[in-house]
Image (cartoon, rainbow, N blue to C red; front, top):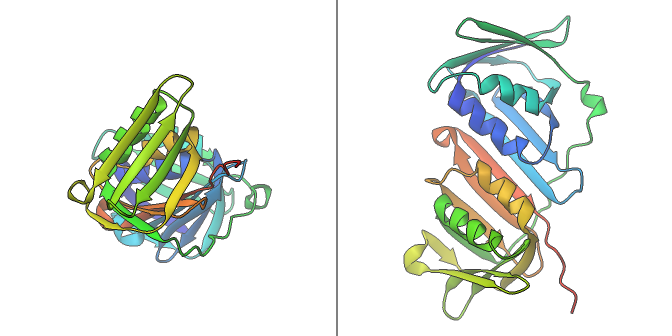
Length: 247
């Protein structure tokens, strides 16, 4: 059983966070809210997204697991104007999702969850450095790095207590740093890792520019990025594996 009414912007933010990495996913429709965890086909990027029942105008669910084509669901949600409500109801006999938006009715065929790849376990990493900054600063760093390279180094200078981003191209380089005064908070620790810029660009698309983002880093470890959506009633964690640098 699943019936819900949700603001189109709230639904869009939740779907975008997952859709930047995968085209289809398993959706847990639990009593407390909606939960998705997925890893991209190359096992490089991972997302864990939770949207609490309180983020919905109304919400009823009893633990169903469904498979969803995210691209199609995002297309449907994008047809709603800002502030419009999206009504969703699962037909348990046909295993289809009925969606209504202001007179528009759409019936979305669901996917057998068993045909979708297994959900990943989130590794329990105790990363030494933690940076809290505004989403717009991640956007600046990613945009600048993209001008010169296809990979990006994220790190922390423990001596000067700053967070830095480096990108080295064939001819041009980019260096971007943020000190304590530019950050919301910084817990210094040994941290420097290289990442694929393509993945960070995709994740950046889903990060609101005006939100607080917590970044956890280590030395040649994955980066974890957490932020809230839906006015704090939803939460997203991205994790990205590093590109190991040859000595």
